[in-house]
Length: 109
Figure 1 (spheres, rainbow, N blue to C red):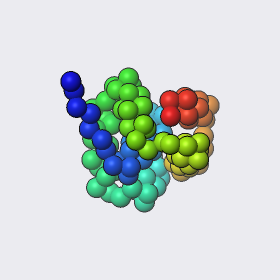
Figure 2: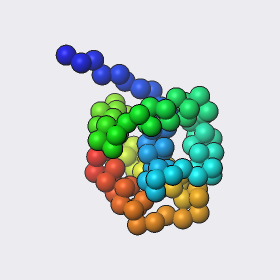
Figure 3: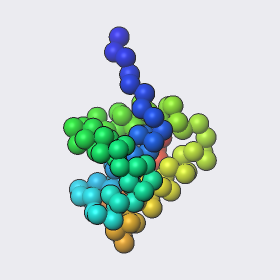
Figure 4: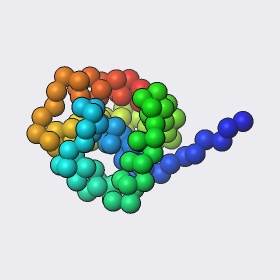
């Protein structure tokens, strides 16, 4: 049996926010600065390295697996999705693709 690593809530949050920032295939300086403000530079750097190693499928699986530890109510889910939307808006705009990714993540959570 493969033992699953349980990441901290801040690390999970960092992963989701990095995922959101990369929905348009690049992370702006404003987006990365905002994520660091939320989770701290150490967690940001550590999780960014993990994120970059993951394929799209692995990212979705990671989010699904970690969500079971931290998403216990609609309020938890809404809060995370609102934070994702805030990160995407850090560069001043939200496009159709970014909005669609938030919708899909909402279904996954």
